[in-house]
Length: 215
Image: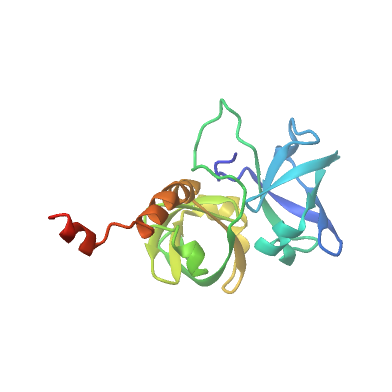
């Protein structure tokens, strides 16, 4: 479990690509403190398992499903990435509940400055937009941000200078793809309500039935 508060920016040292997978070697500093093989680190919002800890770096495997759903496929040697270790039970919950399980990608369609703030407008598929609500939370490349505006096809967030400086947002340009993880609570609520909605659809109580029963 993560909070979406990026600890540092790492750098992709090497990518070994297989037919349907990849092995990443990522240079890092702070996140290596106390990290051991088997631990979880969010890389641009994607929960990856550390397979080896090296001097000044760690390695992680990326499976087929992750490559298909995320923007990791666009990384290359030298690419900066957001890094966050899994949350400790006694840590501060500074962002929101981030599972590190990316739902899909979005495309930056506009970047605007508003005094000191930077607005990012991101376009994504309808199946993701349904879970994004104004004033709700969304993880963009693993960064916990508040949704400020929303339309049918895109949403906007406003980032403070500190957030931009401490994350890969500073490198982003119009047209870039970003990883998106919507609020997990909304997805659970929808899943729990689904059986009830299906029962309503299959109900044999009709207007005619009620009329015949004197209602």
